[in-house]
Length: 310
Length: 57
Image 1 (cartoon, one colour):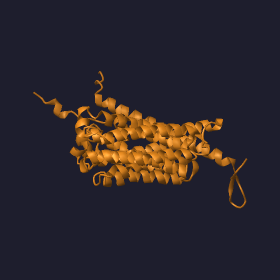
Image 2 (image 1 turned 135 degrees about the vertical axis):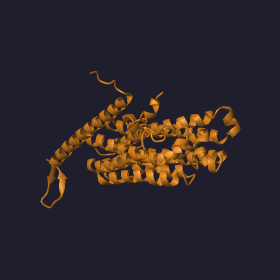
Image 3 (image 1 turned 180 degrees about the vertical axis):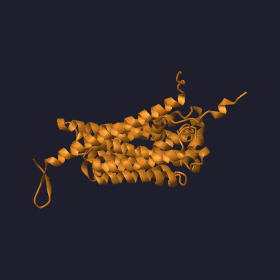
Image 4 (image 1 turned 45 degrees about the horizontal axis):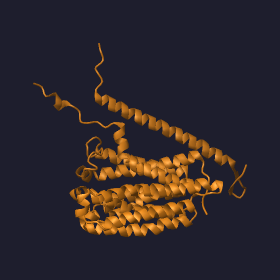
């Protein structure tokens, strides 16, 4: 009897597996926030330049995702949420992820510089470096504040979009950055509360593992309180207006209420209802960010008709 | 002589080749469009004798 299975080839990657290396779900958020940054900037940008800028910002984000998957393949294999990613599942070799990440990093930065300006390209290069080196290689495995500082990488895209249009950094760009930066910790800590086994199995020092779950609940509340004035304060700048102010007041009130409920629960209560509150706050936090940027976009879209802004 | 039936691995390779081909095609189109826009916009700029560049026909 011949064992024909021994001669079968290992699983070979399709095009979709390489697309998965770029973290398309993260890219969609990057595209949206960078597009808002570009569209609300007080200068007109040619549609082709705008399309190219958005594509290369997204490509840069994808490149940093591929570099993250190359570096984190060992812990991705341990975590249930990430075990099916292309590198830990064996579809793509780690070296290929590294090569793709490096090549796309170079292409995206140079092309963004040529399409818009070199300050935007420099910010994109810094973002890729920050996510791949500062967050993935250094902070993620060494400090429970990994999410807090690493959140800066996800906060840069609207600022890059703004700079691609205007050529300089202004208060509005900094506030859009601060909105995502302050939103990231409560968003991920809510996730960490109900994904409890994953991070401890992988040895990632999430706050839930190092400081305990009670402390994480307190941190979520504190960061949500710090986030609210940033989000509401943006209403009184060039990107804000009555629509944004109304949205920010409602969304932050809701988020604060959710954080307060998380803070007031203990593990026994949370276990009893399968972390229903934590899961609902996590889901809400996604809408929170989307609706804030949607309101900023609405203000800019209505401005030509005398409706947006103050 | 009949062709051998296509293995699943050939389908994966085809998807990869098609994906890379389409991506490169889109990239070429984008660079071409970007070049046209940049050259056209540059054409609208007015170059002063002192070396400064201002917008104008």
